[in-house]
Amino acid sequence: MARPRYKPTEKEKNAVYEMAKKGYTEYMMAESLGICQDTFTKYKHEFIGYIKKGREEKDIADIKEVRSALIRKCIGYEVEEIQKEGIATYDAKGNIIKDKNGNIKMDKVRIKIQKKYHHPSDTAIIFYLCNKDKDNYKSIQKIIEKANSKEFADEIKKLIEAIDKNNESKVKNIEEIRKAK
Picture 1 (cartoon, rainbow, N blue to C red):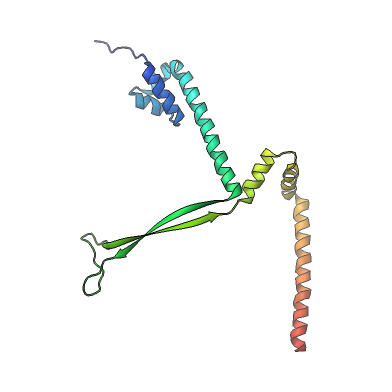
Picture 2: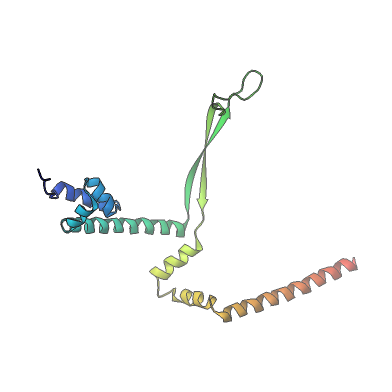
């Protein structure tokens, strides 16, 4: 008896849509549906609308998440870190008790919650402003281009040399003051 021909159901099409929203590959979708990759490819024309819609929604959600993370990096944020510290169990002689596997037996666990502040990121701020307020921050792109040029490197070398000469004269002055004492 021949195997019945595969025909995608509406339930399977909706499942493909949900999988596309979660970022599944076509191979993973086929495997989840219980069909082989070739069969999925053969009937892809029936799934394509669901796949496209699911991937578009995933892209929109990803962009929102990345935008939110970028804004957090621009303004700084605070997180709570939870640290667990175990307190070892001791016997009457003051020795640490270990279990049969050699692991230290813990009597109590101390939980420490610590707030940590992440400062704003200069790079994130520049990136955000260059993309969101192009009229006022076009010059930053020019500065970045200039920073990669040979003239800029030469200017930096001249500044460093001037600073070094200035520091040398300060060192000589300090030595003269010490000798005078």
